[in-house]
Length: 128
Image (cartoon, rainbow, N blue to C red; front, side, top):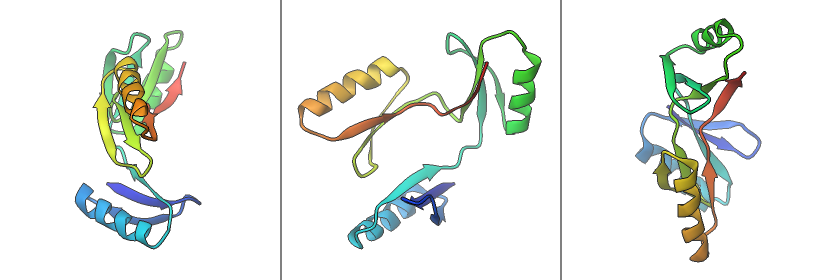
């Protein structure tokens, strides 16, 4: 599910596909409103300190219980995927990368072209 959110965090609309969400955002931007897209995630991953996936979960509560059961180990719970997204200043995805270094190198090249972009790292919920 894709959420369209205003600057105050209010949900303006929800969509099941990217095209409808994109068209809605374009209309809101024509009205002069600043909006953001947020993807509602459905998977959670337990990841070790090297970034290897140990286990996948559908429910956050299951991921949290797993984390608590692995006391003393350096484990993180990530949301949905481990990708680094590079987006432009209006939220268009310019690239998806599996490593921070690849995303950073891409950003350096795009910034030389004068583009305003940023990296969205994998969302991390819990860490030990």
